[in-house]
Length: 304
Ligand code: HPA
Image (cartoon, rainbow, N blue to C red; front, side, top):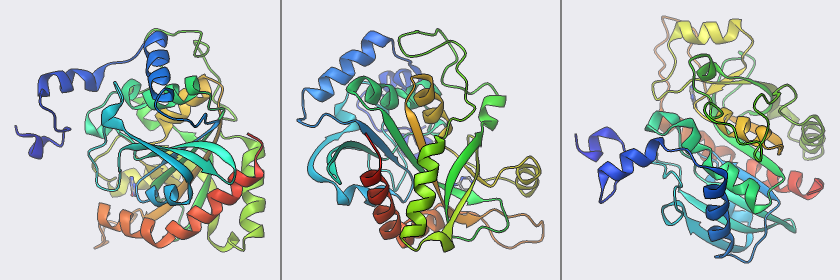
């Protein structure tokens, strides 16, 4: 099968590349990767921000930018999806030293959850203390509208039910405990600041708070799956974020998450609507200014 058809990253050596899709990394290896990245930039980030589908524009507000492509970082997974640039952007946002991941990799691209979370551990060993995650998600909660921004209160790791968890395997206590708690994963204090910030900026109309779930994808959900998600208390669903948050909490980073509701999940069998990636990107485009302003304001308010 050619790469065009399979969706795997292009590479001169496909066999090597396929092998590297699945690898997980030891503490010493991550330390080496973190050092090699820091050697190439002046910035010493304490805040990391992962930009999901359609959220990449947030990087525009960063000053004193220093950029490294994922393909130039040993081991980093390269996203194959439109809307995911695939680079680290270092710099200053509201005076804070930040590193942004402009684009992320997903399990549905064939990467293991260990592989897609390598950047989070790299950030940790670069000195990042607080992680912001953003994603595009389908609205399950019928009160949500396209273009709403949901503060993530909690998550439901449906992929975890099927054995997909980045912490599966040997545990290295230098990263964190064998059995980390994930209650309170989404920092209460940061969520409070977010709600206050949304109010101060006159954005409450399109701000929500709720539970995010992840299925692996890349197929969107069936009607029955959407109904099931609603039944079990999910407000919005996507194909990312949970592996990164799991790893970030394991190594004791504070986490804050936002989902941009890019479409309403189809709940009726008779519906003639179908979820699609173009809609996801278009909604990202529509809300990108608001998201950018909001995140910048949040960053200015937090102690990091
Ligand atoms: N389902 C899963 N992932 C998504 C969706 C969706 O409806 N929209 C954006 N990402």
